[in-house]
Length: 264
Image (cartoon, rainbow, N blue to C red; front, top):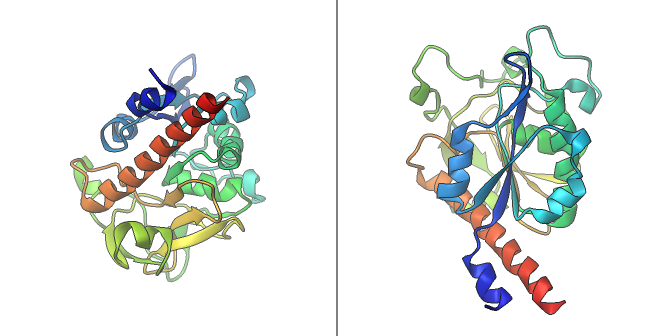
């Protein structure tokens, strides 16, 4: 079997960022199943859960082995010291282990040309990893919407469309979706404040909060969205388009990697 034939039959290996929690005596590393199934079902990939153990992982080597990287949402916030702000307010959840893993992994993945799809906390990590900063409590800012998850409805209702976004004309997201406005859900309290120099705004909410970014000049697909396209299932046309584009980019990396092997 030639390398080209072999590569066409292999699903791309897609890293999925995990959170570090300690519900009992020992810590656990967790990923909501909805992120794992969007890799298998919507992107056509093989998920690899990445534990929040930066001190035990060779992150540049890991990035080279991956065909894609999915940065998941999480109830936790990126710790403010990562972008030069004071400590978290009391009651704000954090996950320093995840920060220590995802922030350098993002930089390594971009350098290696690994396709990236960043969701909710993921877009915030993407911005911080490249030098940007975050709003910590959007709901307390004047003239801003309350973007937080509703707690007075059932699970599925939390993911119903909450507001429209305005998509940048001619940008990556515009080219993918073919429209300048769509409705998205909203389940976040933090958001992008100072945009990292290496990012391009792809969409904004009615109050100006950044809803999507791309990595400027990236070697591969690299998109972050503030909403949650992974739920509900079945996916709508917008979510399907995002995952299909991400999956196609991951498969292209498989072909490129096997091409290098066969040429060696």
